[in-house]
Amino acid sequence: MNVADAMTPREDVVTVELPGTRSDVLEYLQEQSFSSVPVIKPTDDGLEYRGLVSRDALIEQPDEDQLVMLMDDVPTTTAETSLEDVARTMVEKGARRVPVVDGEFEGIVTVTDVIHAIAAGDQETDGVLDDYASENVNTTYEGAPLPVAERELYYANVPYTIALSDDGRMSGVLTEVDIIDVARIVEGEESTGDNFPDQDSEWSWEGIKAVGSRYLPTRDIELPTGPVSDFMTDDVVTVSAQTSVQEAAQRMISNDIEQIPMLTGEQLVGIVRDIDLLEALYE
Image 1 (cartoon, rainbow, N blue to C red):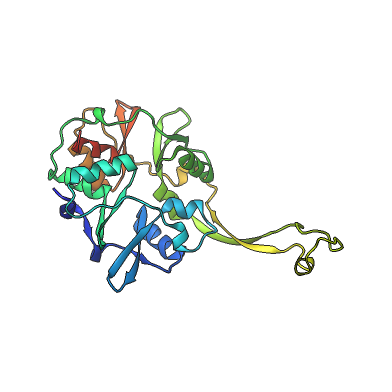
Image 2 (spheres, rainbow, N blue to C red):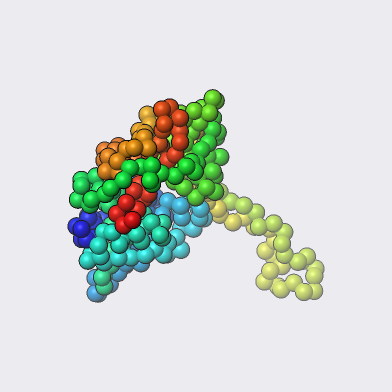
């Protein structure tokens, strides 16, 4: 298969246009659970692709309102590129959404699109999950306040955490999507402080003397302070080490999830993310 066989064409892609603001993107991310949204600029020659705005960028830069300052630079591809090649790019660059660009913006191909192809059998894969699972599992306590869990995701640089109960057993999964669903932007202000020279200083500029302490508008992301257990998914889909790659892809698509804990009996032994399955296409 080529990218053209799996991608979402331009007319079906949710995009935002320059100039624009963060509120244009936040609405889409909250309502449709996207991880990022392409930014385009209409020109006389068509729709020019300019970048992607991700969930992470919105959370990490709450004071920035302009899309042009929030855009990430990600790799692009063409419709004729093989699915194996774009899967390799996604894994090596950590890119979940790769814009399809050939002169102008033509669409987008995502990790989920490739997982669809694997699940449907359009792309043959061999092997079982034991070959692709990671033993490094990001975890948190189910009683941890949500803002703490969000910081744990940020520092671990992964989009999920496995919640553990009082006895250390898996009790649920919390993802970036769960967090952004309940995030809200709070407006405020902070003092600049008395950072200017004394009014009587001979080095003070006349234009500064009368300024003194002022307040600047601020914007921050506010999260509920309730425990992780209030926001996590507790009906967790799981796999075993001998589950096939195709079956795991089918479970991800049918349950609309991006990662699946791997169990031996009732013991958590690893995690399989959708992007891990892409390695089965080119190894």
